[in-house]
Length: 93
Image (cartoon, helix red, strand yellow):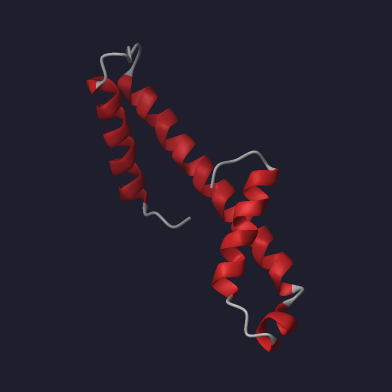
């Protein structure tokens, strides 16, 4: 996870405030419960992103010698691998 808990709290609060400001959104129920669910959604998304990154790194590790031998940009390959894995899983990355 790349975000500190304080940043997740801040982001969740901003999302909730944006929802409250949107005339098309009707907030019902306890706002603290809604805020909790928003935080959970953020954490789940971050967890999925970490899983995708780990999977992409494992795939690229198998080809590390060739990557370095051919002087291929590892960061670019990692980005492409993560994008492909997310696409295969039906996720937007």
